[in-house]
Length: 442
Image (cartoon, rainbow, N blue to C red):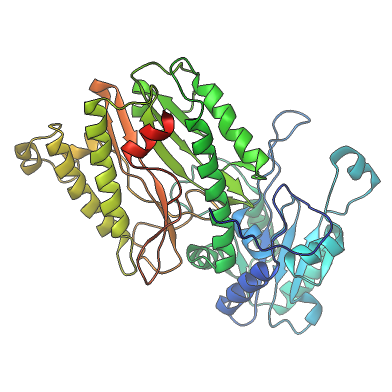
């Protein structure tokens, strides 16, 4: 497994993960500033703390765009970028919640100015009360204002989040400025990973692989899905991951046919297949791995046939993850490959395929989801169906076959880096051949 991690020579470890070389965030800001119009200022805010109850919060998770530009993993933070400001003091400023003895007693660590400067590479770090005056001066000089909102079509739009509140407040105070969208610019940058980012992604994937290998050592008939879930999070936390990059799926038997099954409360039975879909989050970067294996250590003939059919689709799909491929065309081609495998498994007949509705192909009964999604600071990272693959992009590759009438669900997922020299499988250390998995189980 890859073990190299870029570290800073600092004495304090702020988060579970090791400190990250601040040059990553300096480079990210420089790339973003090059995309900004002359005479423009950008305001990018951290995420809200989300209330769990009257005096408790859900674990804080930083806004990926804010983290991408700053490396700061703390609430109530704000970044101002004004590259060509006539006042040099406004060109790059990080604003933070001021720590004090009361906060230290009740909440523990908060960034000092020096530690925030070290983590972010930003030399001008101020406490939040200084923001209003500096914002007013910046708005007096700026013609254009870049702001960040959630623009993903997957977003339900039910939360009045911090960046959106800031957008509404600023536009009410300054209605005559020209407001621009920061999100598409940052999204475009985030799609292509730098070497420093790939180091962090590889670390997240290595920890995820370790959890899978750990599970193989304890799975047997009678084990509960929640016991397996416990083994996974134990491995993640013990290897300095923050936790899960998404809620883990531990689905035995027919539950594997539920795509987003998260109950994880069944007992694994002799003869069941077990589908695990999980990912570690390390330094806010996501791993994502799916594997399916027999609880009793031995695939039945039918289970192995379905498994190997899915594996063949995964390998062919993986080979297509190359620069220049259009993601929508890629998904359609994988569907054709899957159709052939489903015919071979006698789940579909050729005449059904010939007369099918193109808008609702017959294979969707057994393979109802897409094959790949972008990965990075989110497990389903930003990017859309009309993207063309470029070197440095990281995508999942996860075909599945779900046969509800037989209680068989199989999904195999690897994480793939696109390069000019062909796809690089970042999950190559996770066993995937049926015989190899059986050998490890036994």
